[in-house]
Length: 399
Image (cartoon, rainbow, N blue to C red):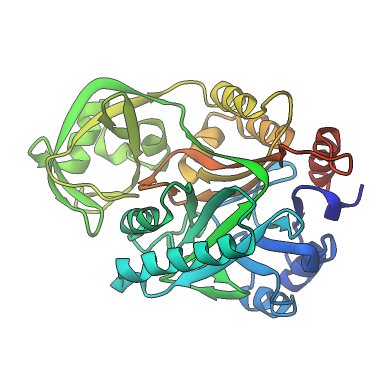
């Protein structure tokens, strides 16, 4: 079955020559048949070469994307690839826009964009009932918390799912793309309307413990925590773990995250790094007075398999667009489970990227596996049966 007849299409290239790689990716799909093309750009690629290729795509196809801290495609976890995820025009209507100048974030401007995009897709496909929004934001902007809140207010009941662009583990500069142009200090929003069933999901493999700590000195604007329990944050966090402050590293942060617990729910607040003065820099905003709990992880592989299996409704394998936190990948690498988790991601047809943070409705979160699961329309016809759908996804994974 040609990929253009599937519910989703995907392609990828590991060619280190960027011009050759993007040519290969676009040659394997039919961009003109797509309502939306999403590109996940691995570390080391020439963004100018990608822009030049994407500007040849007709404007009827919305092209968005971002740089990553790792890619997910055929074969599971990837590095240095260009990965494409496409939604066909026959089953999706899409409106996209971008929010510039996140450093001077205007919530009214963000809400107005969301209202405008929703109006466009509703007007063109009022008979298609399912609507979701997908967000890509500059992962170093420090504005994802405010951005997710503002957009969700305008999106109403429509789920908002997103990921923060990455820059490998360098944390130097991240980029998002809108209509073939890369930008920093910006976010890109796509609103999708479809007759297909869509499930927005978020899960993590972490469980709160009874070990508590109080944030006593923090700057939410910069995501810096200076004090915990009235002591310097880094040394106090290390003491709670029973470790030397010199041992603090990305692996320690991935293995020993903290969570904010509200009722029965918890939200992971991941640590990015420790500064020279012992200050902890987080991936999301932290306020003084917050009570944090140390979390412990259950088996990452077993938990991922269980949750992905739950997304397979009535035996139908969905097409999954995922935003997977870089700290989960770091944990997989240090526990020597990268290959096994990659095999799971491959088996369940996951496409996406490793992020500096994830957005789920009103929240900016960390260390989660968040995304959208796409299923065939409930009124399947003979031309597009559930069995065709499963075959298409499997075939797409071999591109």
